[in-house]
Image: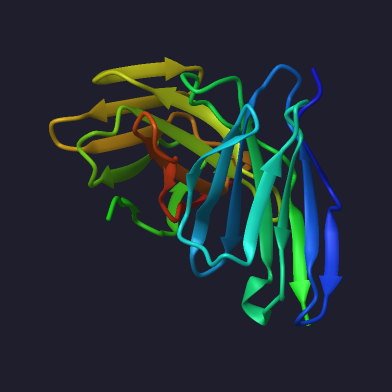
Length: 113
Length: 110
């Protein structure tokens, strides 16, 4: 069974630009969560989607947004990029609401110049 | 604020020894706990999940949960250099997001 895939794997953007990251969950998984990982802050939760509905949202500014499609694929968008947005963005999928085991994709490394 | 605390390490053990990684959590409502291993430059990999008080064994790994003390641990027996990584502890309460600790770096020397 294929794992979680994320595209692109690497991105370089400049301040003020916007970016869209994509995540395809494990086949059959309906829940997708997004995390930001930085050396100083560790893994921080961004949002969680299940059946196209946002179930939980972390403490990030409104510049960070996401959505989930009917095939469970998910995208996250960051607008008006800041230097501090440079991080590894990780997507994780799980089977359903009751199944809490989350499996991570390889991540997208975003660098903001 | 719900928190999961881990000693950042590094924890250094010789090859063949038992590595003991510890984690405490603040949210008494947390019901599920997970250990992830993350190699440098890679994404986290789920290695253990535990939902009930007591021990859960899987190969060389044993997870221990004590909900009264709000304490979770991971024991790695017969540690190998390939076990050298950062180990992330995470706690979850139904209906809320998974909360991660900042991780403990383990170094196994040959």
